[in-house]
Image 1 (spheres, rainbow, N blue to C red):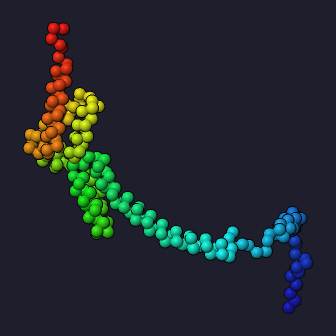
Image 2: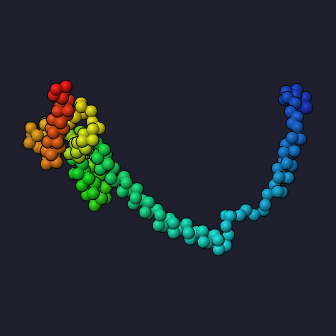
Image 3: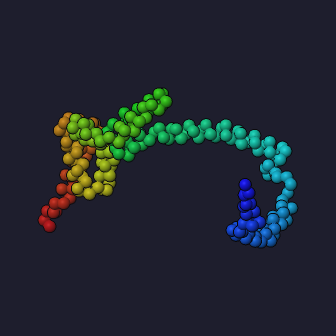
Length: 203
């Protein structure tokens, strides 16, 4: 049986698109420019701007600085962070700031384990202390206000508030000796102010 031969490759129609012509001239120019620039790069690069004994001396100084300064800086930073609750309590005139300070010092012995409790304690509002003692401020707060009152830096409304706070503490029988003296001084100051405000006789 005779089978007619199929179309050969030469007889098949050419369905492929003609190849694109790429101009490699710019690429050749870029390669040539890079090769020219590479000739200006030194063959060996310096590891540092120092060499020899100068490099050894600099390394020794840097090593001693790290060994001495880093531990000292770490200790100072740890101390500053550790006394933050004490500073917060002093700023807020917390009535139990002495106990918070003692807790911060005790926390140093335990490696800082008690520090979170001191931090929370410094920011708590001492409601129970006010119910028991009639105030939520440390006595140093009233002493500072008393010093300002003596030099006339407090207005009358602030003086009345200070007197009422001291009277509330005295009513509960929880007035320290310093504040008792301050309360008496404020009473004298009120009397003197009343006398000065009275019109002179015969005027």
